[in-house]
Image (tube, rainbow, N blue to C red; front, top):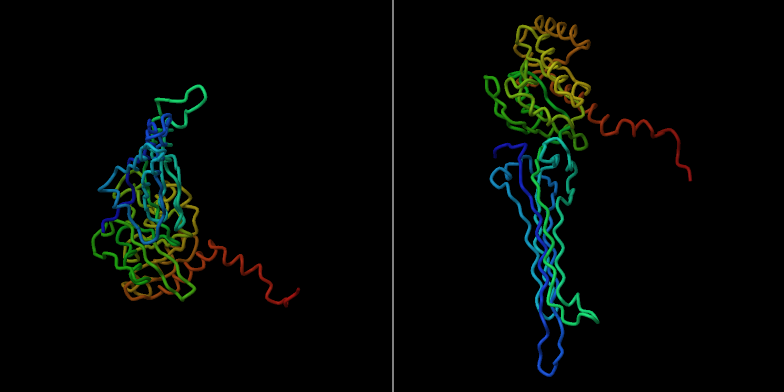
Length: 348
């Protein structure tokens, strides 16, 4: 399935049904009077966040969504039925933006969340509604109220606990495959990953979190170079970032500065997120080269990088444990545990 993380669609709620102009005509009832029923309400437009979806590809092939018009009223005071609603189902993490693509109208960040986008028009009154002492035979009824319409943007920001950042060919997809059951495309050329991949990490039955692998960044990505920074939005919600550095390249310090510069240029708080620094592909390095590269990174980053290899699996478990610690901080687990007094007994 092709990945699509933004789509522009047109939505319209249904018009209300028209009221009916009718008169009661029955044998032996000479003065039957008006009996036109009311029109039904137009259909609404709803949006729902559902599990199991991770792309907006359904909105690539259909961009217009119109709710049904309410049914018209009929004689014998028969009211029209409500028009059918339109339900838009989107992945969890989808934002609804105005046509300007900047104003956020809704954030569908919780599974099962349902919100009303447009309300259908009210149905018109039938002529029986206008009957009175001075107008016992009204010959008019109300038309239904018009529905609402607008263009909106749907923008998906994947819900992940940890985001992977790094230059192309830093080994992010290989690391994701080693850490989870995900099977991303892996090759020896830049920009193998063209769309984000998600992987579920199972450290134990109670220790599970999601990692998002996004396409690699290059210098100038914030200005549109390479694939740009479009996919960085998918790690905005993450607890922290794992910054992978290719240990086989000549200047690991420069690689670190490039990614940090692009994160700062993008904004949205990415540069302030907790970062776990890791020197990858150590299976291809000698012990002396490992120490040399790690020292270079420590000098520029101010902290010791973790040493990992997505191919051999060396250091992967320790890195995942460090990531889990950051996830627990965000979820509030650590704060909750520290507030519990384990020494005091039960008290009524």
